[in-house]
Amino acid sequence: MLKKEFAKVGSTILFDYDSSALSDYAQRTLDRQAAFLKARPQTRVLMGGHADERGTREYNLALGERRASAARDYLVSKGISSERIRIISYGKERPAKVGSNEAAWRLNRRAETRLN
Image (tube, rainbow, N blue to C red; front, side, top):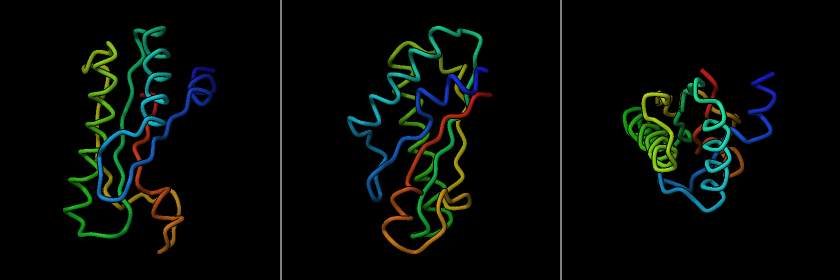
């Protein structure tokens, strides 16, 4: 039941190429996540950072970590304890969409929040 409620909030935010800056749209999604988490103080999340296939494995792992950290830091700025948010970088290892084109790359430049 909790996962269905969280799915309505939105669990994925997208990033521009080679960026960990949060767009206005990403911030609105994270605002909804913060409200959800405030209403459920025992809930913990895993924030996974992802990158598209371009770049080295090491670079993409670092970029994924910056993306997950940016999302976590935003939630913390909205009053969610950092102790409730664990981050991990998957780099380019878990693509949302397989492909070597802009449509696939756009979906793979993301951070995903999962209930933990």
